[in-house]
Image (cartoon, rainbow, N blue to C red; front, side):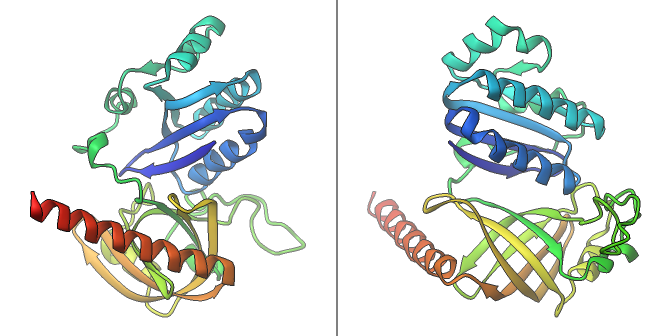
Length: 274
């Protein structure tokens, strides 16, 4: 099964594809955990391309719903495949987790101010989410309260708060073997674009997790240094240079960049010739 995160301004859509069985439950749970750590607690689960789902996976959906609810959020299901819809209705899961015919109606059920969103046709398969967290854990203390950064009792061994490893989630806007860039709206941090820029200041180091949806399953990881910050009315655009990245991952990124450049070039030529 493949999981792709589509971050929106105040919620996220998880697109699942393939067979959702016991083996993939941990990966799903990790995605939900990453989102909650990033302050995203309203989640739409798109099951349109899920061909099979078993009882363990259904149990994982209930647990995810409870986790999000405990953090003040909700889980909504959208566009389930015929198989998933039949199973969900037979076991009565739709009485626990609402089911919707579209991502938009699911998002509207959150009762949030949802800006005009992309249509499914606008959602490119190479659009990826980026999860970022500071190398220096004390960096976020000036910008976010203990509650906002997930703080709690202090671990006497490591000296940081349990659950205090704050991370943010952003949308990738560029990627090559040297580094990447992303745009960040601030999530639920409440930071202004100026404060976001200060948090992600040039020269600061970050742990970065990102996906290569068309080439490599799961997250790629790297450490990177901020090289450019551009404030925008709705957030910031930030560029990073990779400091440490596995050679296998760098090769995958290089291949991915070359493939995407080729595809875009071919599409442009095809469009121009029509």
